[in-house]
Amino acid sequence: MLRPVCSLPAQMTLVIRRLLTPRLGVKISLHAWGLLPGAPTLTGTGLAPAEKAQRMTRARASIEAPTLDTSRRTMTYIIWMSPADTTPWLEVTRGAAPLVVTMPHTGTEIPADLERRLASLWLARKDTDWWIERLYDFAPGLGATVIRTRISRTVIDPNRDPAGVSLYPGQATTELCPTTTFDGEPLYRDLAGLGPEEIAARRTAWFEPYHRAIAAEVARLRQRHPRVVLYDCHAIRSQIPRLFAGVLPNLNLGTHSGASCAPQLTARLEAVCDGSDFSRVTNGRFKGGYTTRHYGRPADGVHAVQMELACRGYLREPRDSVTDRDWPCAYDDEVAAPLRAVLQRVLAACLEFAAA
Image (cartoon, rainbow, N blue to C red):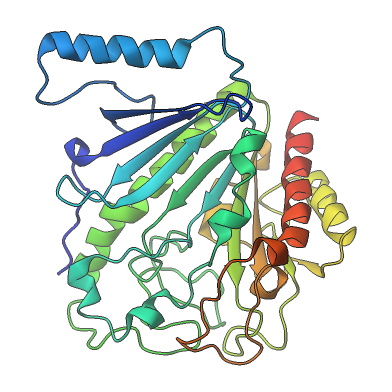
């Protein structure tokens, strides 16, 4: 059975980065032990009291320096897999604007004991939302809070109902702990052991910390702003016959059929999309997953949307079925630039709505 590797609070090692304005070009890194949610606790382990005090003083001075322009300041928390394995898996870049950008499917990390049970590591990573973190790397500069898990969706899918209930009844989909790819290929050599106990362990180790981080950041920003927008980022290959017929539109906006956000926000985002050279549909095949449905509470000032991108809009996606020789393809800034410009306007529209 897969053992949870980050289930104890004492194992949550946080790396805090404070990025000052691009003009200053300053990056200050601090290492600390702390917990999410909430502000980091700048303490140390194995340090003499005097050294602890000096580090606390330096940390406080760097965070509170009053002479610098910190209007675009962000703080990034990274949780490591465990004290013995410092592979970062959960990253929270904290901003002050009323916008939370979530990335549940960009991860490729798979625990070693699970790797041995999989039919193919390429298949296990085939349905990753490739390069989304690079496509949206402008978001912190807008003041957005960005939450990203680096755990592969094959381990556990943070955008599925934790109870295992299908979000699209009667349609092909993948589970909370997937057993097949989108194309229906088996992910495991043998499913023995993938029972309720292992699924619960994965949920405790990786699903719940990710969603605690989202809930904490939404709550923090909601205290400061009357409206907060949660924008859930996704991408998928343009043609997957098992999931949908034909070729997917470039921009697939999901609002849980209008339940997860105000119609005014939907209208703003549709206007941006329709003013571009990319095709758009709202609440088509993808209406919003667990994140959109769970956090979208317009009456409480939290508006959630999902954006599912067809990969051909920003990648040289193969036209036919992909293989391990051509997928994933490399990220190319020039290819991605037109869609990236549209997405910048999309997030700006989210901020304009929140400020209205």
